[in-house]
Length: 130
Image 1 (cartoon, one colour):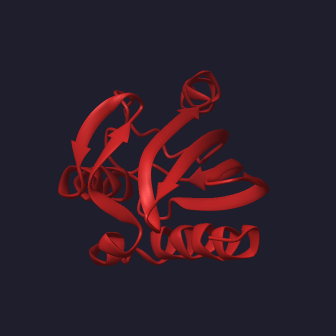
Image 2 (cartoon, rainbow, N blue to C red; image 1 turned 30 degrees about the vertical axis):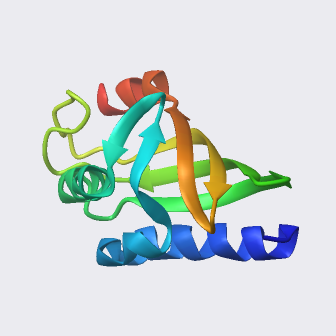
């Protein structure tokens, strides 16, 4: 894939997430991906998306920076939302959160094969502590 094709691919993936069209994940990820170093079935990845968006129904991913080199994508995102149920071990307080996420991907045969992500959990904890 060219740089422009990878950019479009990634932005469509984020759009899919923001629209909650997780049933389309086969377009973006192999049947099994390596997520933060662990093999994960695509269905389990989709279940994680649902877990997050069930607890934070207005969860929104916004791409702030996107870098592409070869078949690798790096993104800095700002994530926002208001938890209504326990999320990442934290009880909802009515407070909204806004935090940074950094994600890295390796694309093989037109879909994600390796994925890594980090979220600023300390900022989330501080924001939900009230």
